Structure formats: C-alpha cells, structure tokens
Length: 309
Ligand code: FAD
Ligand code: NAP
Image (cartoon, rainbow, N blue to C red; front, top):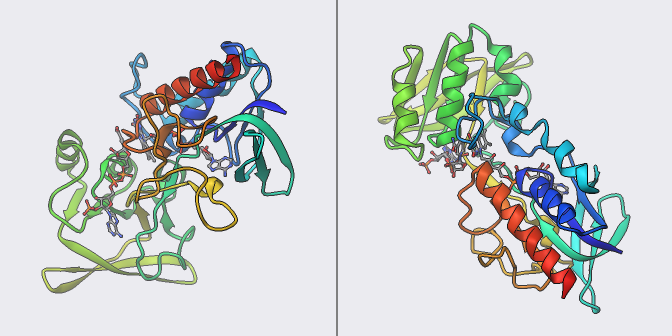
C-alpha cells in the first residue's frame, strides 16, 4: 500500500512529489504516461517563471525537476493510469492501462490538459503530415517556408512569434478581431514584419495530397481565401484530462465543474477525502507553471497532514 500516489509528472505532480517526500511521507510514487515535465516542455519560450531571469525553453525549465523531486525518496514510474477507485475502507485503488493495480491511502491528480482539436476538415487526415500542435517540435521543418498559426490565445501568439524567427512568413488566422492573448504579446507579434494577421476568418478546410498539407481555406468577409502553406499549427486551447476520475458507470469520482475541471478548495481537497487535484486540472487554475507547482506543494502538505492524523 502506498502512502500517496501522484498521477501526472508536470510541474504540479513533480512538486507534489518533492514536498510529500521531503515532508516525511515514505512510500510515494508518481505515475507519468509520457515523459516528466508536462505540457510546458512544448513551449519555445518561458520568461515568467520567477527566479529564472533568462528566457528558456520549456524543456530547459523542466530538465532538473525530476532529479530534484526524487532526491527525498519519490519514485517515478512511467505508467498510464486508467482509473482511480475509492474502496470501502476509504483507501484508493489506482488502475493502470496494462491492467495492473496498486492501493494507496491518498491520491493527488495532476493530469493537466492536452491540445484541443479545431474541428476543421482535413485536420485529422493531415495531423503529423503538416498539421502540428507543437512549434518547438516541428517548427524547424518549415525553415524559410510559410506557415499558418491558428488561434488567438497566448499559446498561438507566442508560438507565432517563435515561428516567425524560423519561417519566411507566419499567418495568424483567428476567428475574431480581439484576442485572449495578453495585449503585450499581441503587440510584439504586430511588430514582426513577417507576421500577417488574418482576422474574422473561419477556417474551412485543410487540404493537401500524398506529400502532406498544401494549404488552408478560410472564409473572410463572405469570401473564400486560399492560404497556400505546407504547415499549419493549431493552438486552439486545451482539453482537461479528467478521464482517470471516470467510474465504470460514467459518473466521476469527485465533483467536477461543467467544463470538467475538478472542484477543489484552497487546500486542493476534492469532494472525496484523501483525493486532491492540483494544477491545470482544477477549477479556476491560472494555467501557469508557478501556480501548478504551488498547487502541488499545497496538496502534498495536505496529504502529509492526513497521514499524521
Ligand atoms: P501538465 O503540465 O499538463 O502535466 C500533466 C502531466 O500528466 C503530463 O506530463 C501528462 O503526460 C501526465 N498525464 C496525463 N494523464 C495521465 C495519465 N492518465 N497517467 C499518467 N500520466 C498522465 N505557463 C507559464 O507559466 N508560462 C509560460 O510561458 C507558459 N507557456 C506555455 C506554452 C505552451 C505551448 C503551453 C501548452 C502551456 C504554457 N504554459 C505556460 C502553461 C503551463 O504549461 C501549464 O499551466 C502547466 O504545465 C500545468 O502543469 P500541470 O502539472 O498541471 O499539468
Ligand atoms: P486559450 O486561451 O483558450 O485560446 C484558444 C484560442 O483558440 C482562442 O483565441 C479561441 O478563439 C481559439 N479557438 C478555440 N477553438 C477554436 C476553433 N475550433 N477554431 C478556431 N479557433 C478556435 O488557449 P491557449 O492559448 O492554449 O492558453 C491556455 C491557457 O494557458 C491560458 O490560460 C493562457 O493564458 C495560458 N498560457 C499562458 C502563457 C503565458 O503565461 N506566457 C502562454 C501560453 C498559455 P476565441 O478567442 O474566439 O474563443
């Protein structure tokens, strides 16, 4: 039986692992289905993590976190968690995709989110063949070529700026003419000579052939515009990963908001005792590394306090 299972190895999970083991919990394991680091590892530029004065990539920011987190006894296992169940003795069973299970006294869920689909014709067909959700991963394929960035949030505008350093031209295609992205970021993009804003534009179809993407058709002011590009980066928000909380009858283990975020109090406690949620998965998450990390620390301190009483 574990004292604590942590699900997800992003900033929230890794910090929860650090604080829980340094704070005295002996038997703590973090389960990560991919690589530790979380979604920030796909960011090309991070400049708002306190204490890191250089602009770094997300990968650089996270590279030392697993080592620091495991220094006090945290174990990290690369496993995909399928489900968390509450047992009659008030402990939990964590069920993995490979069918294995483990019992644990407490659980911190830190599964974060994944990129949303834009729902455009051709998006699935050409995913990985010209359609991408990661500029740091795929931007280099479009060196000196033209690309589209779809979306008007912080991710879209920041990644468009990054791509404008590599690519000949970047079209930012956005369905409105105002932005969710912070004004300072939008201003920076507006000052780039090789960024063109295509606003009030509805994306209709990504088209191509056997070699990959050839372009994007958008409708703007009642007319169809054909933007001929080999690369389309979609940054249209993120889906909350709450599947591990889904029970066999389709209900969720704890209370969720209408949009699927886990409802927690200021101590990251969910509606079920011993079950905590931290980071982007929780309600009203500011969706920042520093906040996810803070949530992880708070949840870990609560798990320690529960173990002692
Ligand atoms: P995540 O980072 O999403 O980590 C969740 C982890 O859980 C992942 O590693 C995932 O693989 C794992 N996981 C999911 N499901 C399972 C499962 N079933 N079993 C096992 N493991 C699972 N924030 C900033 O502060 N500054 C920035 O400049 C900034 N830039 C960003 C740029 C981009 C492109 C993106 C996408 C985000 C950016 N953010 C930025 C936001 C920041 O990355 C997130 O707020 C933060 O990573 C959330 O941390 P988390 O630990 O809650 O979740
Ligand atoms: P977001 O803020 O939700 O923005 C998504 C964008 O995609 C919006 O402009 C939205 O348009 C558009 N969109 C959504 N669905 C679409 C569709 N089907 N077709 C076309 N466009 C669509 O998502 P995000 O940019 O990924 O940011 C997520 C969170 O992380 C935010 O809280 C953000 O602040 C944070 N973040 C912070 C930083 C930073 O601090 N530097 C960097 C990156 C992300 P509408 O506006 O019209 O809805």
